[in-house]
Length: 389
Image (cartoon, rainbow, N blue to C red):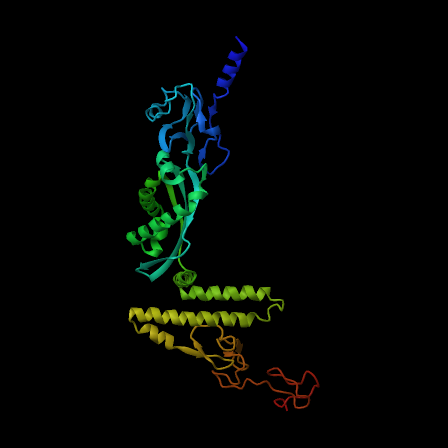
């Protein structure tokens, strides 16, 4: 072989290329292969991997689409290119073409959310403002359509380049779907899956024109304004309260716990218990009156009318409470026996309610020491008592 033949063969061999794309990113949708001078020689090798599609664009038109596999670029493998005149200079001459690799895998965990609240009419709350967010999965369903409608001549197209446009379309379709379905706000949580499927179908009607398809659509949360949620929490608390007597027990338990944490020991225990039972008593009266009023009975009104005076301050309290709502004192005074007949009397009573005997203890006439009932001599000075003298 002559020297000139070797040079000729070397010149021909340097144009044989391997056209392939190894994706080292997680968010690239489209990549344009950097062909030097946009010229491809006959015999170039094209390798298209799984989840890829190679698109040849010749003179501004989509010429051919290659699915996964290995190809040798010649007239037999590129009939469309032949029809467009790509090989008019013969198979040994280069032709100008652009090669785009389109990533057809699913792009998962793409986020969406409402930047502003959505105004809706609800049967329970009237007009409400809702916010929502979630995620979706996307893939290129039509590579040719995607290049024509979205990517254009971009050499490198990523998900973030179309993310904002997709989010706007999603929020629009979400607002439309949630308005048409007329699901009450309190029942939305039970309809997330159905709502997601309905929105996905609507979104794909729009995305089909971009050559894209949403494969999964998830509604993660739909929330009401904070003030409405606070009102719902109060309403739930009232429903969870149920039995007013149990609420009284709960208040008393809280008072005991707070008193145990107090550094002063049990000094505040009585007041804490009194306050707890007082609030509990008032709640019991309020709920009892409401329940009896709804039933239309008169027995509840009679029961609520029964009050007992506090033995310490005289404040009227509901019957059955153990501590005064005004001073925190015990409503049930301690019992002491009558000094004469032994009948149980309220502590501090001056006369026996059974025999009428005075309950004031006798005192020594000499030293004023209190004398036990029936004592004949003073235990301090020995003076005889008046009863003895």
